[in-house]
Image (cartoon, rainbow, N blue to C red; front, side, top):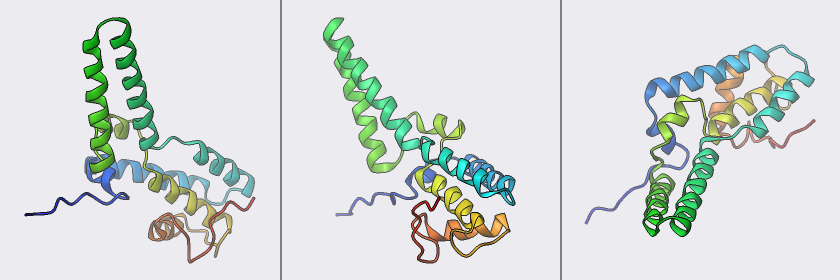
Length: 164
């Protein structure tokens, strides 16, 4: 009997995203880092704060699914019990997303530019490298490459807690 293998948590969303969309998202991240290269620490700190508030694709899917489930429950209570099936369908898609990384709104959200937490962290880490939080570089491409290699966890073992 073959075992079912689930995709890696870190790559499951990008696996179900069209290559061109993944490339566009990475290109936008790269442009953000290049645009901020050479700016002062205050400008970098402001962008880092924006990244802390950016909604990732997971949050968007969870919020949308929760709203749809609540809507189905409310319509089932106040209009017709059959609406409860809508809640069940949406919950099933949410489970599918949790396990496999795909849900019906995923392609739309990715086309709209919603990034994964790891993609946001790559930009955050690249900006911290440019800011000099770790060993500094003035090359935005090198900073982004180093941030990608770090996997969003740390850069050369350094603590990535914000050092404002």
